[in-house]
Each structure stands twice: as C-alpha cells, then as structure tokens.
Image (cartoon, rainbow, N blue to C red; front, side, top):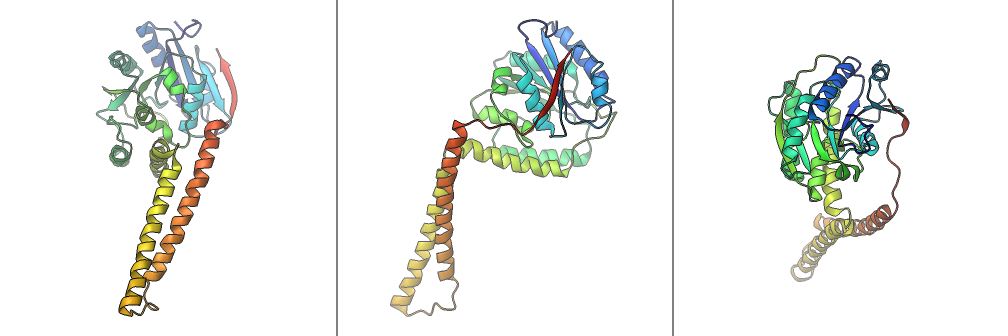
Length: 315
C-alpha cells in the first residue's frame, strides 16, 4: 500500500545530497521494508541542492514524493521540509547514504507500540572513522549535561516519531540531531533500540568539524530556548541584578576602606571593577527587557522558515 490511501500510516523522510550512487538502492530497500510491514506509506526524498545526478535518478523512482530545495540549505532544513509535507501518522527518518538499514524500521515501530512517542535508533556497532566517532561521543556527553535526554546516539538519523508531534516544531541550523531532546523537554516519551549500521560504499561523507561546531552552538541554543525562551528576562535580568549587586558590594568595600582606614585607591583596580560590573549589570537587565519584548512578539507572529522550496512533485 502506498500514499494513494486516504489515511497514510507511515511517512519515510530521507534528505539526500549528492547521493546518486545510493538513492536507487535505498528506495528499493525502503519499498521492500514498507511492503513487509503491510502499512499504508509514502516515501519522501528531499534533495538538498545536489550538484550531481541525484535528482535525475530520483525522478525515475516510483512511488516517491520528491522535494527539491533551490540550493544546499543543510540537512536540518531538508528534514523540516519533508516533515512539513508529510501526512503519515508516524514519520520515520533516515540518512540517504545507505548506512542506515530500512529493514530496521520494523524494530522502531515495534518498540513504539510500547507507548513511546519517539523511538531512536542506536548504532551500537558503528562503521564510521575514529575521528567521526570521537566527535560524536564528545557531543553526546555535552548533550547529556545540557539537555539531559535519555538516548545514547542522537546522531543516528534512523528514528520513528509521532507525526503530529514532529510537525509541530520548526527546525533551524543543525537541530535535527536534537529533535528527541526537544520533544522530550515538551513531555513526549522517548525510547531506543539497537539498529544496524553499515559502512558507506558510494559517495563521500558530508560530516566535518564545522558541523560539530555548529551542532554545539545549536545545543546551547536549544538549552537556552527551552529553558528561557518564554522568560529571557529571568536569565538576563537575573544575571544583571547579580552583577550589579557584586559591583555595588565592591564599591561599598572600597568606600569603607577609604573612609575608615584612609586607604589609597587611585592605584587599585577594584573601584574600576565595581563600576564595570554595575554598568554591565544594567546592560544585561536592559537587554533582558528587550529580549522579553522580542520573544513575546515572536510567539504572536509566526515568521517564515529558513529555506525555499523549488517544487514538489508526486509520482
């Protein structure tokens, strides 16, 4: 059964970028996996501005919904475009490089029946280079500290989500790897199963140190967004009050030394530090007020996304 059914049970969303050597085989494996599950489904490939023959290869595949972005906006934007165009009750995501195995979709769905809103794949035996595994494990430890999610492998794209939950969020930057953490912070339940992981055979990896840096910045952004998005004044205003209080104590201390102990202050740095902290505290507080106004306006007005779709074609 495909998406010709009125009610689609399963949406498979795959971002592809310069994967001409993988898309045909990947589509065939997804097709086989979906047929074995005996569920109505749709397969969505999102081309993220490929410069090779990926799009041409995809146009010969059926059934397939092909979304073409006008340029390379990044994997997160590609995922978001696919999510927004999906209609399935459950959305399954995976990479387009054949390292994820579509045969594992059944494992995710079986675990999801245990009451989880999201089930994440865990590449227990990864087939990646040492450097890629090192950066990934470092990021995982930082993620545990900042986001406190409950999964081992946020970088694994093979996941199953409640469709309505996933379509309710907007993604930017490199946020796709933190989706379970974002949804978990909103109260959704997250499970995990061990899945297969295969070495890349065709094409080259798109992963590099720049993505690690961007991912870390996005991790901080998610932490702040989920903790203080609706109350930035609490963070910046509270920090400003604390800085101002410390600066005031320092100046009082300097005044006491000058008045009662006749201390020479002209060559001491503490008075300058006190004044600096008070000025910084005022700036933080004012910034908190402005941020509070901006966030309230944001929640009132929904802005456009950070990508432009060229066209959507259905076969």
